[in-house]
Length: 322
Image 1 (spheres, one colour):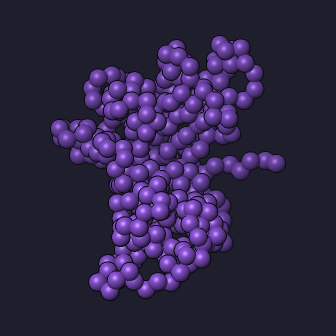
Image 2 (image 1 turned 120 degrees about the vertical axis):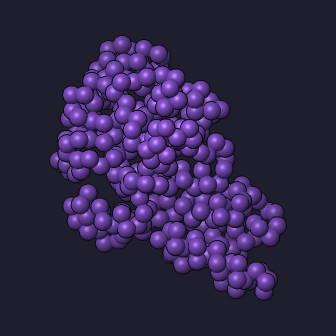
């Protein structure tokens, strides 16, 4: 079966991801990282790819690329093929180095571009490799701090997105979420991960606009519905946790504090309204009785003075999901 050709819009920014086959390492030592960076420089210069950010981890990598032509594929082929050739020869291995083709996600400018830059640079922190992003050598964060230099890294767009090159706070703003356990940071990361299946990272209007262009025709369901179908519980629960300042672990527990009951009520109501999962599936995910969750979804209020608050939270969450 012939694989469908990707649609690439020249001048737009893309989040590009590539993973090791079966989650295995594709970078083992300093020489591997250096060779990849040299090949990235070669591919960017020969195929007119502007690199705004990158983070190379042991078993996967993230790139923020702005192709100046519609031919992103040639540059990525050179990069991936030549590195795989080098790695297989060095480590005396055969077979595919990567887990399928590289992923490309079209990124909306503004706040979405900013959050992606944060996400890429905070990868080593999320993986518990370092406590701070500047402690990790193989990302573009050190060049933004002026502590390392890659001549092929274009810093202009990122710095302007965060306040400008001469703004002393622009660098600090790149990793604004210094606490990786912050609810907002977790929700942001979840949405970015979900965007991989969509192929688009932006608001609902941006996603719908580009969906038909990227995939050739209009799907029977909107990009939003597909995202919720693929990651229904994760998306809803992450949003509720961020809004109510609770954690999934506490929601799954037997604790009955008001904030946890409120969180369970909101999750149950959102599941009922979106219809993306059954209450049986929800019960398995939360480790709770499905019939009790169904009753909770129908419950009009926990107390009369809280009903207005619950309605406001529910309305806000639904609007963020749509």
